[in-house]
Image 1 (cartoon, one colour):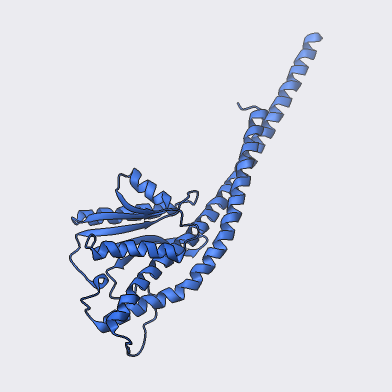
Image 2: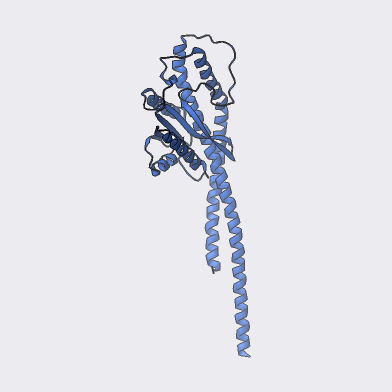
Length: 290
């Protein structure tokens, strides 16, 4: 049976852990507010950009000189797994890796090759641990992603698609709903879809007047669409990560408090048992003297 000193040391240890988890919860909450403001500001623009590209491409029709619009038989698929650089965020990273591996198994079941692009240290390390070959990884950007980060990923994705190394590009990320809830989303980046990626976009009305030529417009519009879509996913993932971490640390703090209460009760019982034992020893000694 544990002594009072053992239980006291355990209580002190759990209390120190609780202080750490509480501090991490506050930090994550502060970062979440900033990340949430960024993604809420971007969403309307991203939705309009998605629908604009879809509508313009649909009105122009088949454009042979736009390689990112080309559709071909799928023999190789690029999967972008968008995770975080750090853990302690509940199932945030595990859900992305699990869904990405499910997609990879399904594609390989169809006889297709899978090319991995990992965003975040957790995703890259887990995929390598699962003996997956990661072609490109991007680390150190998930806490506060910039548009330049999205541009770098978009350039790499476009390069793979234009060279014919992949025939389809799928991105898996956490969509931010609230601090308590995130949803794993799967988006087909390339080829450019023939309809809106989300149901939130509004159909553009009216006819189009192209100035300059429509091919020149699409030449600039499609890379921007790709960058904006990836940038949105990065911001969604960042907000989701901070929300998941804040919730996980809050639960850890609550569990630590419950454990401290249980240990305190055990310590009080141990103290009572020791006092009772001492009383019995005194009574037994007094009886022996009489």
